[in-house]
Length: 488
Ligand code: NAD
Image (cartoon, rainbow, N blue to C red; front, side):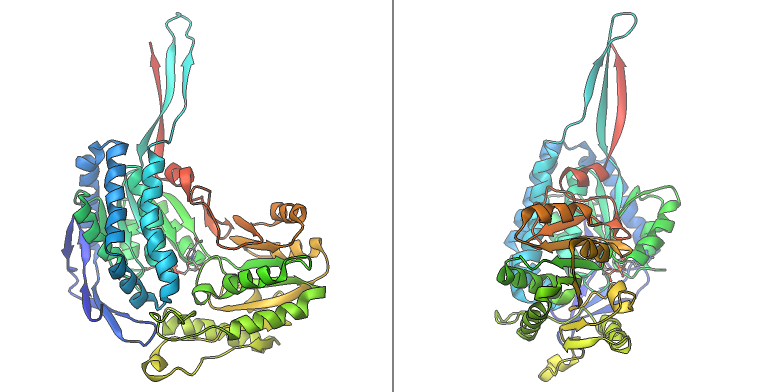
C-alpha cells in the first residue's frame, strides 16, 4: 500500500483531476508516503454530481428496494472478500492498531450495507381511508421517495466505518452519492469504488472526489446546487460553514459533530468493570473517537483510587507496529493534529493542572520517531473554565474532578456547549436511569461504553449535531415523503 496513486471515482471510472495536481497521504506511524492523491477540481465535482443525477434517472432509480438490497449485500460481501486489503489500507492511513481496525472499522464497513439493505425492505408509510361527502371515499397515503443526490462529507478517525454509515442507508433508500473522504484518509473510499463495480452497482451511483475542505473538493461539493442534501461528520465549526453553503438552494443537512463527553462515576459502581470501560472510553483509538470521554467526574470517596487506576491503564498501553497484536495504542492522525493536542497539553499546565501521567511525546524507536505519537495524559485540579476542560481536544487525554452528590455531577456534565455522549457508572440502576434522563446527551451509556444496536438513533444534542442516524432515522433523512390523496 505504499506509494500508490489514488484517483477520483466518477461514473464508475477512476480519473485524475483536471487540476493536474496531487497531494500526499502520509502514514501517521512513521511519516512515510502512503499515496499520491489526485485532487478533484470543480470540474470533477460537477461531473460526479451530473453522473449521480443521471444514475438516479437511470437503472438505479428504476430498481425496486428488494433489488437494491440484493446489490448492497453484494457490496458487503465484496468488502469481506477483500478484508485484508481494506484492513491494510485503513491501517496505513490511520496508524490504528490491527486489533481495532480488524474488529471495528472493516467489519462495520460491511455491516453498514447489510443492516440498511435489510431495513429498507420493511420501512412502512401510513395510509388512511377517508369518507367524502358524495360517499365515494378517498385514500390518503404517504409515498416515500429517495431524496436525490447526496453529498457525503467524512472525517478521518473511522474512515470506512463512518462513510459507509451514510452511504449504506443513502443507497438503500434509492439515492445516489458523491463522497468527499477526509484528505487524511482517502484510500478505503476509493477501494470501495472497485467493490461497487464488481458488485454490479450501476455507474454514477457511488462517486468519490478527493481534496480538502474550503476552496477545494469539499466546498465545491457542498456549494453544488445539483446536490439535494448534505450529510457531514466532522468538527462543529466545519458544520457551521457547511450549513451556510447548504443554505444556497435550501438543502437539508444531517450533522454528526464534535463532543466534550463527560463520564459520571459513582462510588457504588463495579470498580474493576468501570476502570476497564473508562480506559477504553478515554484512550481508545488514541482518543480520536467522537464518543471518547475527555471530562471525568468521580464521587469523592473513590477519587484517588480512580486516578491511580486510570494512571496504571494509561501507562500500560503499548505503542509500535500496528500489525503487532501486542500494540494497543496508535499515533494521532498527523503532525498537525499532534501540534493541536500538544497545545492543549501546554494550556492545561499553564492553567495550573496537576499532570498525573503523560503530557508529552514518547521516545519511539527507528522510523517511528517520525510518526505523530503522543503520550496518554491525565490531569486533575483544573477549573471547569479551562480550555482543556471546555474544548474538544480529540486526543488521548482527560481531566478528572471529584463531585459530592448526584445533582452536582449532573450540573458539571451539562455545563458544556456539546451534548454528544455520556457514560454513567453505578450499581444502582434506578440512579443510572434517573441520571441518564437528566444529562444532555444524544447517547448515554450506563455501565458500558460504545455499545449500541445499529437500529437505534445516534446523534448529538446542542452543538454536537443536527438530526439522528441509525435504523429508520437514517432512512428518514435519506427519503422524502409525499402526500397523495386519491378520490375514489
Ligand atoms: P473536519 O471538520 O476538519 O473535516 C471533516 C471533513 O469536512 C473533511 O473531509 C474535510 O475536508 C471537510 N471539510 C472541511 N471544511 C469544509 C468545508 N468548508 N466545506 C466542505 N467540506 C469541508 O473534521 P475531522 O478533523 O476530519 O474529524 C474530527 C472531528 O469529527 C472531531 O470534531 C470529531 O468529534 C468529529 N466527529 C464526530 C462524529 C460524530 O458522530 N458526532 C464522529 C466522528 C468524528
